[in-house]
Structure formats: structure tokens, C-alpha cells
Length: 224
Image 1 (cartoon, rainbow, N blue to C red):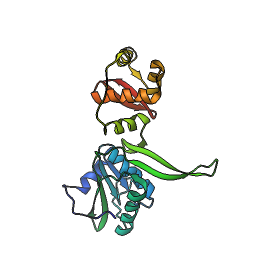
Image 2 (cartoon, rainbow, N blue to C red):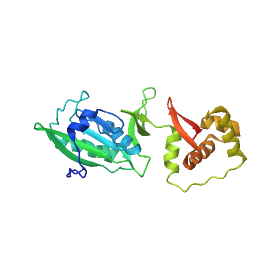
Image 3 (cartoon, rainbow, N blue to C red):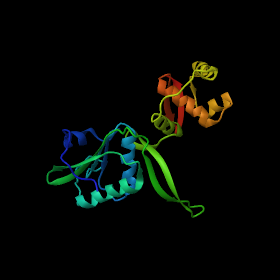
Image 4 (cartoon, helix red, strand yellow):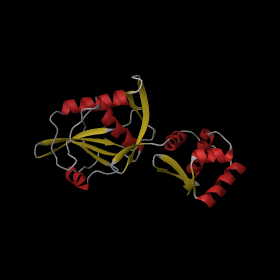
């Protein structure tokens, strides 16, 4: 179970609440679903880190939590059952007018991607299956990462390997003329499998030649 430790860095509850929810802050009145809190924990770890304040309502009212032990048990279940691999996090309590707020601080991870793991039921077939997805922060929301973003996370764990062949040069000329391309479009243009196209594009992102953005859940590549 996560241990409540003294806060390791200065933290102002009132200042944080006043800023409202956003890329690095999320409010939860209470938590009762390990799978749901796991989404937020993994999303913060996969993005730029942040704080989850449990005991704060969406309208910024500090309502507090009724049971510190039960809340910690939900977080423990989230880590054990719903996130692979486990990210680092720190938990401490802030008190305001005798109301306890549990602050879960998640640093940006060096071990991305962290997968959210959940058993789902297919309504059409009635078959249960384990779903593994990667979530990232998008403003004040948790969004499913595109296949391209996941490939970029995974690529960064390996040494960069890229040869500037005629294929890469033609890709850059295409981007100079058309501004943007997706992995399936590049695959069709170059006559190669989509995964190979994505590998090349991700390698170019890592060199700083190309940048990756997301539109409507799809990965879009543009010249940097």
C-alpha cells in the first residue's frame, strides 16, 4: 500500500486549488474505482507529471475525505491491478479547516509508456477481455494515446538508429510540399508496411527533424 510520507517539496493546497484543474492538476471528490484512478495516475506519469487532489470537488470546494485508509487501499489496488509498469508516486495529507485532502504526486516517468490495464466485457459477444491502453494528459482530461505516440515512447527506450536513404529524403520533400503526413499515408506512398513507416517517422521525431502531433486521435507528422 502507498505510504503517507512527509511532503518532499513545498506544496500549497490553497494555491493549487485556486489554479484549478489542468495539465498537471486533477480534483477528485472521492475515489472508489481503482481502474478510474489508475487512468489518471498513468496519464500523469506518461505526460509531464502532476498532482491528484482527493477530497476536492470539481468546483474547487475542499470537502475532505472520510477515510484515509480506504482511499489508500483504492490507490494500492490501482497500482497492483491496473498499471504496468508501476510508476513512482508520493502521497501526503494536507489539512484545511479540519478536512483532510490526500495529495497524490506523480512525477513524469522515465519509463514510459505506462499501460492502463482493465478487464472489459464485449456487449455484442459477452466475452471478457483484458484491454491495455496508454493514457496521456490533454489539458484537464485523460486521453488515449495514438499508436504513434506509444511507438515514440517505446522507441526512446532503444538506441536511435536511422539512415538517411532516398526514402527519408523523399519523405522530407513530401512534407515540404504537403506540410503533413500520417504513418498510413507514408506507408502507401513508400510501399512499405505501416509499422515500418511509423518506425521511420518516430526516428525522425527523435532527431528533431519531424514533430508529432495528434488530431482526432490520429498521429500527424510535420516538419519541425
